[in-house]
Image 1 (tube, rainbow, N blue to C red):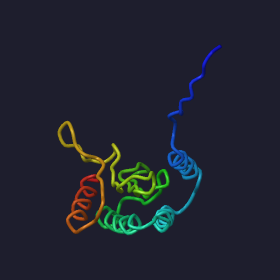
Image 2: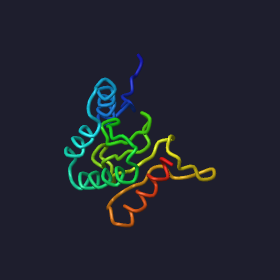
Image 3: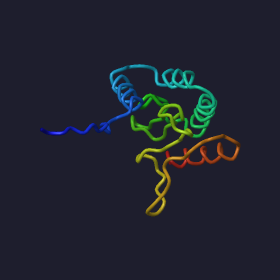
Image 4: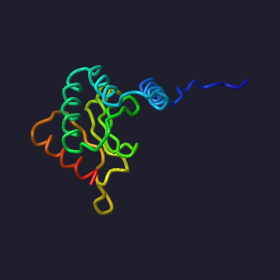
Length: 140
């Protein structure tokens, strides 16, 4: 007789599956990117919503050439159809903090190692200035 051991499969979480489904919908949809981003932001719980609104304004002011769009259900900003940066709400994957990140298309290279994702617990003028500078550099 073979004894079976019960092991929980280490697959995708329900949040990750939902994000993948959102990405498929994004690829098939022909929607207004700005409207989609603002809708996603409006659906976020606080304090993510307030941070996302502020980051949206910072990105638009710092890099008006970037096109707002959603990416895996998150607000993101693209150049030539390639994602440059994105905001991930803490609630998206039940994380303890929100993040603002950059893709490999961002021009942030600095030597052999550099940060591309930043944890955000609170936005002050200092953090806002840092995000604005990073976004400007990313598209330069």
